[in-house]
Image 1 (spheres, rainbow, N blue to C red):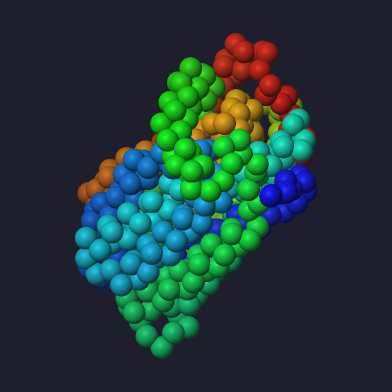
Image 2 (cartoon, rainbow, N blue to C red; image 1 turned 30 degrees about the vertical axis):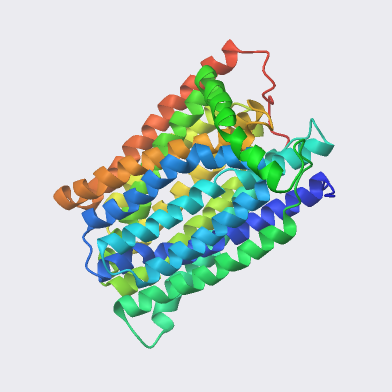
Length: 428
């Protein structure tokens, strides 16, 4: 029989598992696009392979969120880790559009499985012993841990090719093998640290079958919740636009910095450092989120709007920078600003749902992010090929300005529903 953890224990495990989850992702970030380039893929072809990731995630996002709500968080998280290992190993040996697409498809399955359960487990665990407990601090620290894992991973992934007695694709593939090993460690940690919450349906094969049968009903209930709640619709639209923004930076960023640095190998090292610094900035931004909430008197409208406008300006700085240093500084500023508003918006999302649909609602938000990423993967690389990398990057700036516009609408939605349980200000 499982024992429900206290809020402090749940927070520490949530933060630690989040860091470990994103460590292998950070290792892969500096080399994934450059490896595909070294093996002969064009930017447009790379965009297509990454789009496969978006399509697979899109198709599975709500079913896997419903699966986690129906059968529990731990098995879904463990399955996600195994698919991550398979995707990274496939990418390490891929040498064609088909194989790179297969690798991204496996990673898409992993992402769909992973997008909601750990966060939902943390929130539900806190609420099991403290129904009115504030989770903003845990979300903020987990976002910082996310960025820290990415930071450490990016340093490892970017530096490793330069330390090897090889070059080109052979060197760029090695970090992916390291990432696969780290992902396997994460699976073991999930099985050890995620304590299942008591479920009305019990456990065992019969409960598993019953839980799977519940998935369509959970999805339907969550869909009705999201479509009828104006605030949730606004949050999903913001997530969609951020997906476009991140695509422009993460797909074109490695190529842009490689061009500034002079070669793919040097570009991997440079982008590894840039990514590490940027993710560290994101960690700082996440930790500052409660203070940002207090400074804006709990106004998500003000915090989201202002940070989005400034983040758009930072992306323009990346696109137009004359050299690596200026571009790197602007890149880091974007991540700092973007991370600062995320925990505050996420707190709103959790205040609008219940434990019965929490994983699925988080998955819906992730689905919106993936839809934006899919659109960006299909359009941004082609624009970059026709008009240059800076032009492709400015698409992200335009999308970030739209985030600011949508954020202004959050005021109307909150004022129209004054009786909601939304916290007036994060407690930090």
